[in-house]
Image (cartoon, rainbow, N blue to C red):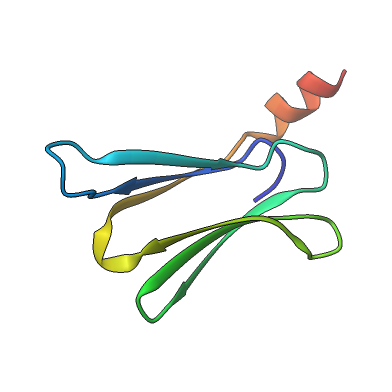
Length: 81
């Protein structure tokens, strides 16, 4: 995933409605990565060097939906002109 891409995470918080979180790669050279390990889902914004800039962790048992939104290459190119 690259600039403009995002990951949407819906979490069951025990309330009547689910809570929505969005992780966005908003700068050039950044990407969003999703990792799953045991009972955790980790969504991270990663820079060009591979260093994690921002990390959000969610309990896998509470995650209702994980949706990846990819930006079309033409849309990003048009924004840079």
